[in-house]
Amino acid sequence: MRIVRTLDALRAALAEFRAEGASVALVPTMGALHAGHMALIDAALAMGHGSGTRVVASIFVNPRQFGPNEDLARYPRQEAQDAAMLEGAGCDLLWAPSVETMYPTGFATTVSVAGGLTTRLDGAARPGHFDGVATVVAKLFAQVRPDCACFGEKDFQQLAVVRRMAADLDLAVQVVAVPTMREADGLALSSRNVYLSPDERVRAPALPRALEAAARAIAAGDPVEAVLGRAGAALAAAGFVVDYVALVDAGTLGDPVPGRPRRLLAAARMGATRLIDNMAVEQP
Ligand code: PAF
Image (cartoon, rainbow, N blue to C red; front, side, top):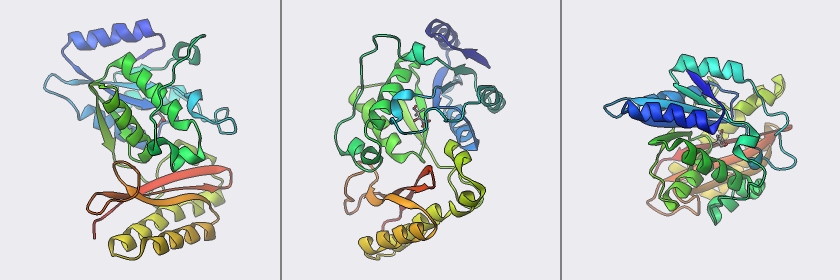
């Protein structure tokens, strides 16, 4: 696996892949890789179209998607370990630009998806976060020009924002959603799980448990407000401070629409660590 850090080197490597007739699959990450990211690489490898796929992973801890009081400085950085994992998983190229390469002096453009998709839920709790995500993903798509790009369903709102942005800008990239990977006790894999103390780690699976119970109850026809209230109470009892537990339309993330797929989303803080998770809700 080659590691490239400049746009010229990236373009040269991509030109070789294209000359071979390969399609290109992108896996954007912020590093601190775990099995969930490896599932994205597997999905990217599986996207092969006849002539084969080359998988490009990016590692870039994007300062524009962190709020002023968030964890940019302490976000785990472990590039050598990440590169070894990517190589083992069959990744062909690692794009690891510096902040200066991504945002050189004078950089002045923001890609902003308007409306509830970016202002509700995590958008309300983390103002500006999705502008940072849309801007960096638009740049990655422009730099790599992938045929497809794989994103985890764990960041369900991010996935919806990226889909909207790619569709609105007529970007010829297929956005592929990859199911969330979980620990044996149900906790969704996340680079931020390392922040949890041993005691917090024991209590954290209350989040997927509460979502699973709520998804079952809603599918069984229980009144939604009461179910969401019970989920919030279960999270509080486990020591979480709840940001939101919401039932939304799985496409727009707005209010649920009868007959359309629904999704339960939650964000809650365990000590200093903010966790998010989500689950599909069966139609009654
Ligand atoms: O999900 C992530 O790791 C990041 O938000 C992404 C998509 C790589 C953009 O920085």
